[in-house]
Image 1 (tube, rainbow, N blue to C red):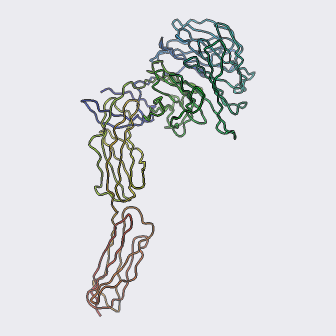
Image 2 (cartoon, rainbow, N blue to C red; image 1 turned 180 degrees about the horizontal axis):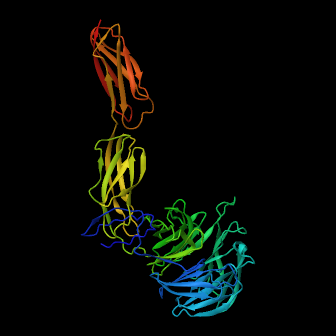
Image 3 (tube, rainbow, N blue to C red; image 1 turned 180 degrees about the vertical axis):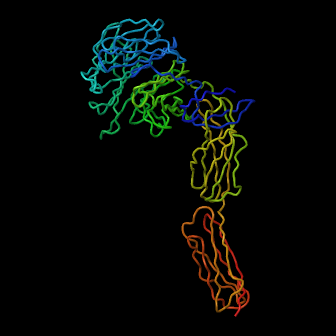
Amino acid sequence: MNTAHRSGRLAATLLTAALAGTGLTVAAAPAAYAAASDAVVKLPISSYSAIAVDSVHQRVFVADSNTGYYLNKGTIAVYDFQGERVATLQTPAHVSGLALNADSSRLYAGLREQIQTYDTTTLEPALLTNASTDTCGRDLAFSGGQLYFTTPYSQYLGECPTAQTYLDGVVNGAYTRTGWNDSGKLQLEAGPGGRMLMGQPLNAKAADPFVTVYDTSGDSLVRNAARRFADSAGHGALNLKDMAFSADGSKVALADAAYGTRLLNTDDLSDTADAYPALPAGATASSVAFSGDGKYLARGAAATGATPDLLLQPADPTDATAPLEFVFEGSLDGDRVAPRGMEWSADGSRLFAVTTNAAGSQYWLHVIQPPAVQYDTAFTGGLTHSPSAAVAGEPLAVRGRLQWDGPDPAGPLKVTAVRQDADGTHQLGTATVKEDGTFTVLDEPDLVGEATYTVSFLGDLTHRPATDVTTTVTVGKAPSSITLTAPEEATMSGGVHITGTFAAQGKALPERATLTVKRTDRLGTGTLSSVTVAADGSFAVDDLPRARRDTTYTVAWAGDALHEGATASATVYVRR
C-alpha cells in the first residue's frame, strides 16, 4: 500500500476508504486528504501580479509586478513542474500580466510601456509592441488567436484602484486600442471557443461592478452577455477577485469576496441551477480555477487559523464528494491564496497555487497533485449499540467499522450520522474513526419508540462513497426510583414520619414530581395527601395512624411519556 505524503498545511485529511480485493486495510474516513505531492518553494519576489503555466514545456512563470517606482525593473521566476527553479528573468521595467499563446511557444509579458515576448524553449526575449503607459499593472489574455491586455493609468499609485483602464490588443500583428474602457484595474480571462471574460473589481468609482463575455473570434471584440449583481437597494454587488471558464467553456466561476464562489452560465451569465457549497466560515474567496480535464475546481481563499485556505473538489456542483482542504499558515507556507493565484496544468495532473503572507510582502509557490485513482470503501460488521437497552434522555453509543484500501490517511478520518425517529431526521454530526477503523457515534435519543441510525461515508477525491449502514434501536422509557426510610414502630398519638428520595434517570422532568401516598391497615386501604418532591429529590410523609398493629405506607409515581413509574412501600408497627 502506498503512503501519501502528509503536508503540515492540511487542515484535515479527506474522507478515505477502500475495499479492493485482497490486502484490505482497515482505517477511517477523514475530512481532507493529502495530495500525492505538495512541493513548496519560496518565490524570489516581494510583489505578485500573474502566473502562467506552459504544459508543453512543463514550465511555470510567476511575475513580480514591482510597480512601486517607475524605474523599477521586474522579475519573472521560472520553475519546472516539480518546483525546481529553471531561470529568473529580469525585465527592463516592471512586469505585470502574463499570457501564453495557443501552442505555448511564446510567453507574453506586460511591461510599463511595451509588451515583451519570450521564446518558451530558449527563454530569449523580444519586443512585441510598444504600448500606452501602464502605471498600475496590466492584465493579459490570449484569446481567438490575438493578444489582449489592459492599460490602467494613474498619476499616483494610490489612485490605481480607480484608474481609468483601457482594453488594448495586438490584433493581426498591430497594436490596437479596442475602445472598451472603465474604472478600476480590469481583469481578463481567456476561455475556449474564442471567448474572453472581462471583470471589474469593486472600487470607489464602481459601486456595482460588472463581468462580461467577449467573442474574440473576429478582428473586433463583440460583447455578448454582461451582468451586474447589486439589487435595487444596492446590496449584493460583486467584489471580484478572480474568474475562470470551465473546461468546456459553458460555465464561468467567480471568486467573489462578498459572496464566495459564484457559478454562472456563460451564454447569459445567469446563475446555474446548482451552486457550489459555501466556503468554510471565516474564509474569503480570493481565487478560482478549473482543471483542464474538466474534473476539478480549485477555490482559493484568505482565512486564519485552522480554516482552510484552499479547497480542491469536483467541478460538478452536484457531486457531494468531500473536498481536499488545505490550511496555509506561517513562514513555510504563506497564510492565504493570493488573488488570481492559481493555474492548472492542461491535463489536470497539477495545480499551481501562489500563497502570500497577510502583509502581501512574501510569496510561495505550491505544486499540488490531486489523486488520480479512486478506491472503494465499505462498512463491515454492521452497527452495534450500548447500552443494549436504550432509554430516552440517556447517552447511547452506536459503534461500527470502516474498511478501506489505497493511500494511508494523513489524519483522523470522519463519518457522518443521522437519527430518524417519529419526530423526523436529526443530524448527529461527524464521528472520528480510529486507526483500527472503528468509530463511535454518541447520541442521546429523546423520544420513546424506534430510532434508526444511519452512518455514511461520503467519499472524497481519492475514495468512492461507501454504502450507508443502518441499525434500528428500540428506545424505552428511562427508569425512576423511590426509596423510603421509616421507623420500625410508632404510636397512634405520636404519629408516623417517613422520609424518602425520588430519582428519575434520562431527560430532566419538566417540573417536580408529585407522589401519591396510600395507607393500608387492618381497617382497609385509604389515600392520603400527595407529596411534592423537593429540588434535591427528597420528600417526607407524615401521618397519624388510625389503627394498631402493622400499617403499610405505599408511595408511587405514575411516570410520564419518557419515564417509567416507580413504587416503594414501608411497614410500621403501630402501638397505642
